[in-house]
Amino acid sequence: MSASTSSSIYSGKTALISGAGGGIGLALAKEFGLLGMNVVIADIDKQALAEAKTALKSHGINVLACTLDVTDYAQWETCVEETIEKFGKLHMVVNNAGVGGIPGKIEQTDHDTWRWVVDVNMMGVLYGTQAATPEIKRHGEGGWIINVASMAGMMGVPFSSAYAATKAAVVSMTESWAVELKPHNIHVSVLCPAFVKTRIHESLRNKQEKYKSTQSKIEMTSQDKDRFKKSFGAAAALVESGIDPELLAKRVVEALGTNQQYIFTHPNYRDAITYRSGLLGKAFDDAQQSELVKHLIDEEIVSL
Image (tube, rainbow, N blue to C red):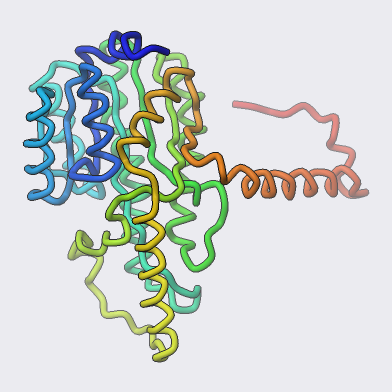
């Protein structure tokens, strides 16, 4: 799809993007804005949000900034209301806001941190989609829902189970909504990048007070503390070696042009995902050979 064709598809329409104070969210806001969209940038970091708004306006982009804690559904509703008041219609929501959590062994899992990761990475996606979908349906012009997951949603990540679990949930939510919303001409995609130059390894800076209510009772040895420190350092190095958010944003537009449901940015991860697919295939082979359940092979699949 040519740039002019892309521009005509998006021109005059409106996108609401969470976590758009920087990184992937800001890059997507700029890319869609340059294609002619009105963009509503939302973020919990007010200073970053203000700076992002200024940067986008310098490119001549129509922009509205909305302070948003994605774990608060009422704030989502307010942001959608402000979007409609400003631009009249909403055509796209990008559920981008996400946090990395804290790496650690299962027996050292902090429950408040898990709730934080689940609420931001999973419930935030639900809230954004739930708040925006009625408005996207209302005008009957169709639209897009883009959920930002991760390559971690396609494969487990040792010592980062909260992050991987929530991103896997986002993949599954996308698959469910893609079928549900297709009759309304709403295309639902999930973006699964590997490492991108963002500040996700610094996401503790925006951890809300409600997830700091209890003091962790987990005791760590000095060896564990050293390992955690090294884990954060390794994570930072990997993130900082990732692709530029601007490249990712162009890739998203490219993939939407061919109606991709899964948007991948790192083809070098194919073998890892293929390995997982192979394990699933072997599991089905095992079931097909089982004397207990092989009789179900010809049973019709029931769908809702």
